[in-house]
Length: 328
Image (cartoon, rainbow, N blue to C red; front, side, top):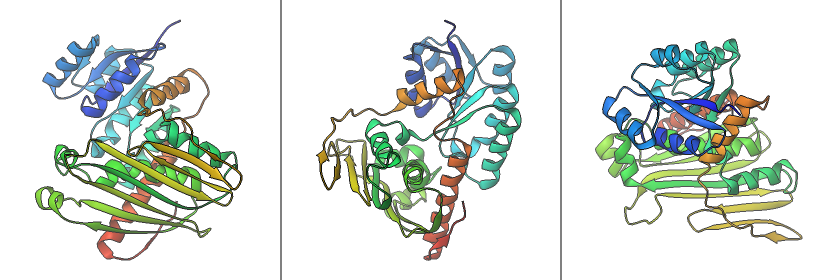
């Protein structure tokens, strides 16, 4: 069987994670990588045995036959690579967030719709088995209607310094949780209230150390989301992840730092075995299936735009100190 041919655009830390995930897939091969950093390109080529390297995306599409691309460029540089890939007629896995402005996000969605190619957003919580299990329980109606939630994502300070102020911790971490919560609670959002704190990371890099985001739906349901990148370096977990969702029939709680998952109703409590899987190879498999079949991405352009609008509202709220109405 002919393997799906994948190109990776952007070979930074996340780009390399995608190379690893797709290289392990039996129906796929990473045949090309593209980056403006020549030394990084050669390093990745030598490490993973990738046949072709390019410093220009247009040249890559002209010279290399591809079925799909992964775009892992910095957040503010998503629009142009998507437009080029869409014109080339290849399906796209785009790292989150979809963009940093609504204008760019809408241009991205328009481009893929016009070209009739698939756009999948890299919202990894959709693929981490423990989070997917919670989402499935709500989709099946086992836990009733969601009414409130708490979600937390935290990384060590070194991650904040690695990104050097080029994005907020809401863009880096919060977008995942926002997308996950929207996938359970729905798109009928009313307001977003956010507060942020400025300490060491802000003093050094000019971006907030943490955000508390409160999302309220028109149904009256509410979710609180904490994101921070000021965890001490001594924390053995690079990434702390926790989520609790309460429904009208039951609740679910996952804490991947504390290594716990439980789902409970009035009649039972289940403790499924943890996989501790980061989800990237599951995400890669889903993208390959979307290329090979009529399957639609779990998180497409609209999901990316919705999460971006929530993030923009959170930023506005944290500056003004007031709730911000949101229309998705």
